[in-house]
Picture 1 (cartoon, rainbow, N blue to C red):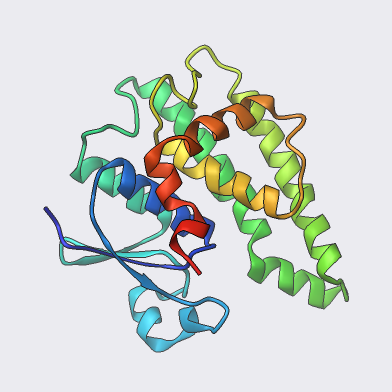
Picture 2: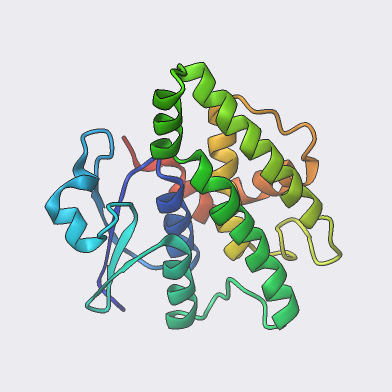
Length: 212
């Protein structure tokens, strides 16, 4: 079994995704905190791991890997059982599309470095930052709700077992709830979230279980 070190922060949704995937794969890992509130992500030591200064970074197989979806795809290839993506290419593409909608369309514009910069530029307060995030999360998650209206959706986004898309969905819903966003228009996603959080791999990765 590989020696694995995860450099993360407890409330980082990208880190949360990787924790879930590691748990689903049954992989033991050492967790090293990179405290975002204290600026440790911008320090030289972390910039050597990830030049852009984000978390997570994963030390595995003698390599440092960054970007949560790239890390999860590597884990899927390196440790294929249990699978996080189905064998059918079209269904795998559908699930990747859901994951990418969240990770590439919703998450970046709601990242704190974006919302803080926007608030500073337009003299917004904390409420304005929350409004900004809720606007984009609502728009994006309504699209994901529509994408989940599919014959292959079961208790999870694909059938009876959690996978890649669920690893990405649950942290985004955690962020939405932190901003007091309602999921009333997203019953499928709320039900999938319930199924995921009842799973030990997801429960163990919940931010409050690993930090602060």
